[in-house]
Length: 277
Image (cartoon, rainbow, N blue to C red; front, side, top):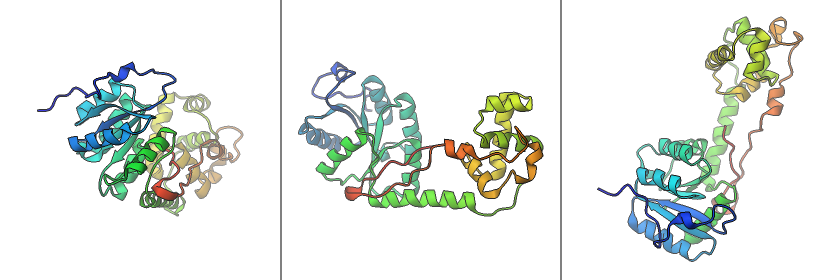
């Protein structure tokens, strides 16, 4: 049975590195194969700006490493866990500032999109060349997202499918007056607390109504709800029930919300980062 303690490198505790103004990228390598970890260390040893501060061979060690040692980038083997997505979420919950690069062979479309939604900022093949690996580390550390061209195409298709679903005609579900009032408040960019004050109820009641509205309309957040209202003219027939002047509200929530970026492919398989919801 392997130890659950994270492994430091070169016998020097990573915590000795300065928290602020450090001149190197602090990397944790999480991989079940020792030979892979050794190879990664040798590659990064040739770079002045990259340092492997810890190694891990299982999930427990990985979580312990990113919690104990300041970590800029985590290089994470996808098969380290049978539920990689859940493991990623747990790691980011413990260390939200760590940027994660997932390494694996034949990572499919569903897993690629799921990993990105969970906060992964790079996906690499295990057969990646040393120079591209180093370049990926630097780009991800600088705030970019790294994908190969196939991954970029999958992300584009996912966004297109989501947009098509929002705009497609469907049977209009029946909404109560209270639900329409809350929807009108959302489209005006109002917070739940403000909506509750307008209609004379509590913030928790507004949240409960919104969950029901999301289920009825097949949307998952306020931005999708605002887009749905705009494309389906949901509030045009309910002007007398709306918050405010009783007129059709302008969908300012769409303008206020961050626009969904469309990633574009570049050379060497990188892309611009898709924004998470």
